[in-house]
Amino acid sequence: MKRISDIYLESHTLLYSRSVTFADDRVQNALQSKLERESKWTKKMARNGIRTSNSIVAEAIEIQPSNRWSAIKKTIQSILKNNRTDYWRDYVRPLLQQGRMLEVICAE
Image 1 (cartoon, rainbow, N blue to C red):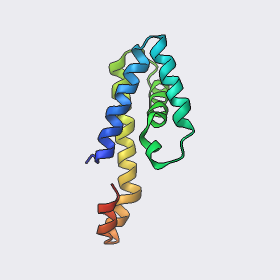
Image 2: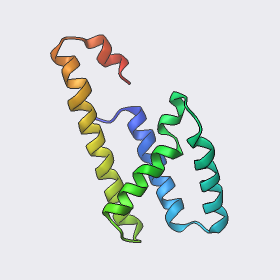
Image 3: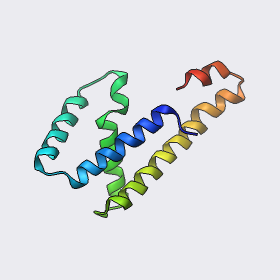
């Protein structure tokens, strides 16, 4: 099951990966500037920003060094699915087993 933040992160990361793959030099420069600016952020809102998307895209390109966006897209979706599975296993399932339903509801 995808949370709203998972859907946002997936769409943001896929859009970012497409921009990185096909963008011209001006767009690449703008993305790099935005990455540098957001890397200095410390607030919670930076959690799903370009910095997170950049690290996921870098990991996907490392796993799938293809220049085909469709291959990179599938790798990104796989990474995000694994992240959701890990989140469920490590955080949500123990709360459910302990009967802490309110914390599960607030987890999003």
